[in-house]
Length: 519
Image (cartoon, rainbow, N blue to C red):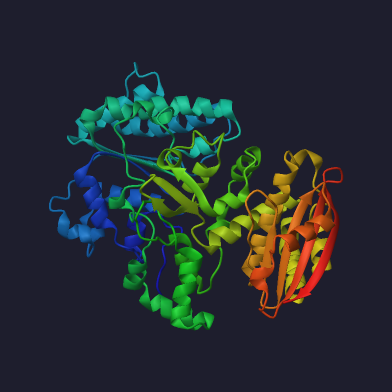
């Protein structure tokens, strides 16, 4: 019998009744519901947050039969049913001042049909407060409140500050009901992608415990290496057979492509569940998570901030920056982290700073593939073709063709897109040669503060020095005078010393000099 994978299934009841694979997280859920009352939890999209809330809902509905064989079945003795108010902001459009009010009104109206209404409750916040109290009084038990993707309205209005502020004000008052009706609430959890700082939505809701970077709940969503081998060992063997790869090679490639998420200082690595399950279901590797869509606002934030892309591989931040995106006008890093494009790679306990980087190859390669057409003004379909041609030039030692092809990358970039010419050159080169590095053994290094480039393959070494309104001959002279090629002598490879001069006036490569040397 073939395994059933819960891809796209967000209902715990449907998952259990349908016989789908479930990675048992119920011991953590039991710990969550028995040791606290108000929580906030952020994770990237497609990481299982909706399924988590559905599982908690089934628990508070007292549906013991759905938990047969799971850890919580042994831990819970009473299995009582509570009134539940579940808000899902996922499948909605938020593009007008009325959108959010209309959606909240629709949710509240449906609850009022069950729990009643009062004429004096004229605002959304007052209506929500009234529903909470009447639900608890009518059912004789405190209310459970579950909010899925609380931040969807805010994220959809990035780039529209006035509408976003309107939504913030609405949600701030709306969520304030959780604090004012504490007496009638049993448990509440809000989930989302991002965490807005205390000065905005949560300023009146300071009783939420943020467990997004809490070691106790680091594995609440996502799949660990141990869980893969506990629940999916047979699946790995099938994948090995299907891909014609040895079992150890399959495990290594799964790790390279989908592992690497860390949400706490010392947490173990987590696999992206959406990509992992799709790989095992389709029995082939692919960019499943990335292909579900990259928000266009990420590109806009990167370009508006004049962000130097090579910082992405080793960005150093404090926890204050990671825990709020209200600072994103000055930095794209918080939203990149919270959206899952960057993750914690190291933690320096002495200075209490986090070193961020890409979690895995799926995200890194997908991200640069997404950026290239926008930074180099290519059609997305043309990008793969251009990368293929670059790789052919590099692997075959066609240095002059490589530079001419590079020159064409800068030929059609609109003037208005370039604010800082040197930074733009740096970013295009970084994107381009990162992508080339995925398809060849080329290694890419840059020195701080200059657009210097080194590529090494099994046959060739390319050492490039870039100048802006300078001299290509002098650039080659700098390579020789600073002995850049010394580490590669004696390797039996042909060395290309390449000096390239960019012109501010033409906004492109103006001239270049190539000097060859046998190592």
